[in-house]
Image (cartoon, rainbow, N blue to C red):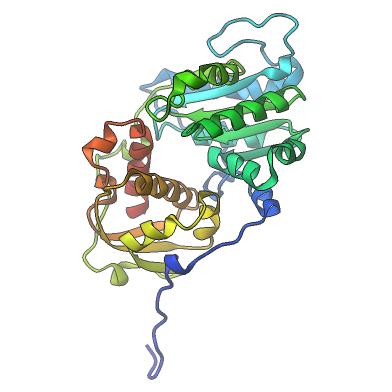
Length: 340
């Protein structure tokens, strides 16, 4: 370091309070940077699980068929009545985390012709919150393919919103491709009184052909690893645009930022430093952290952390509940991000 020059100190994630306009939210409905070049050819199926290659080929055929030739079948293979318009079709990729669902969804987006959008479930519901339901319908009307990643229904309001949105858009010719690690008929189980919304969930799920993808988490195929921890976070931070915060302060800050803004919260960051990571005691905090991890993973932002390994922050009581798969997905992703 040159004499008299003061080293640049990391910024703080808790100082970020992004403001996102509806127009910016709509413009962001594209695959995350890591899937910019995703294609069906670049997908690498695990040879031990035949369903991976067969689902890849089925999704490619769905995209190539186009609206007019889409198969008119229900979620579980039931044939639709001949009067049912073919435009009410979609594919739903059901499988565990790390089997390449998002890659295939991004490949479908890139292969599709015409107007198309790609976003997480929360991004679409946030768009409805910003534009209103009719404003969102008007914005998306005419879209040939809507891709929804990590489809989840965590509350009754989301159930109603997505049911109505899918119904409105399929009736005007839009097709859907979605991913989740929960079969459509089971969305909401263990989270709210799903039986009270069974009709709405079934009406939505009937519009999709489900495709099950089996396999192991590709992020852990080579070796079963835990999230990496360091003793000195500031010293371990890489060059570039980085932040440094106490883990508890970041978790508290997430409560003041709407999840739809988490994309902007981590925008342009190369790494985030987190000190004194500790296990969660509050499920709301844990779910907010999961949402942030998803955005960090999409943007491939490295995590440098001390304290409890970030894949071990969920108590058994949380892992035994209805959000188990969300927590395990986040655990898988932080292993990759801390070992980037």
